[in-house]
Image 1 (cartoon, helix red, strand yellow):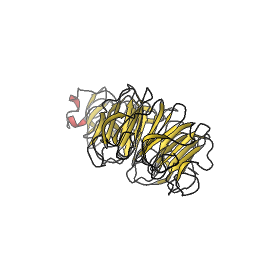
Image 2: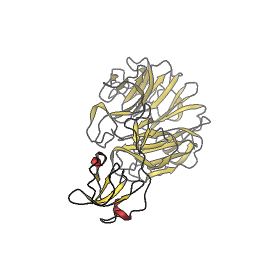
Image 3: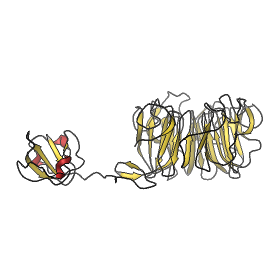
Length: 433
């Protein structure tokens, strides 16, 4: 058996190697040695037969007993993180201390953009939404294959996208442009979306996606069955990004379930698509294939299209929602649908918002309030403070803390919390890297 001493053991045949440095002997066979200076064949009495110095780790599977003295192809040492990574870069990934720059919660999975511009995902993966080349669910983060240089990320139910520093876009998971069903064609690794350049933001949800372009226009692709792409009735499935004709000077776009919303640079909010529950916010229940103004909402700082409802954060910190309210999605203490914006109870100092089947708001005091799944009004997430970003979708949620680490909570059947288990947690747990 080959052993590696993580220190300077004695050199020479039959040396008992009893120095303190050799107490950390690592017995490895068929694995790559992570540390060491000498490789030997060990005898039954703890001595050694042969010793050969090496400059770095070697692959033991290429050697057999008695060959230690013949090893002459050293490899470079793998980088190793310090005992404690510094503030702002608390995660040790592949030997480097890095941090989380952005988190995006998908249907039953989660993705994070790291400060090194790579993207890591975890959770459900039946449609390749983790982008790792497999359909295997993961309960801890894994890198999206070959993706580096990402500027931002967007997660839908079964697909995810990244807009890149060079202005292009790549997506993986369900191919939104060729199918209106969730089990259609898929991409297990990122693929470039043709026709998109100068992308500054992307939003994706069920079977549709939209990209905001640097010139303030919006381009959408995927399912347009009820006008959620803002295209006319002749287009049911749009395979490539197409411009939404009437949108100009847009600052943000959000895709929901069968409807979409946007806000322009002045703060005027507009929505389009299905309106059976009043989710367009125009005071009617009439669907529209062209954007309509949300009544009374001309100072939106953020807007999000959720599951048959919509929410916006106003510049002063108040939050308003409209649309379906059977599960308290509007946060107004009732279960009555609304076709006009209504105040979320008690929220006056929100600094960031996220919406899916439920909603969460980050407050100025760095705590988080959520509502809409089991709560008809905002409820504080206990034990969570120092938050700088929150993201939610179907039922689970994640928060990025000021030290750029992550905490997640909620159901976990697919490993979407990233803590290495499939156990759900009502209280936030740390993502394990």
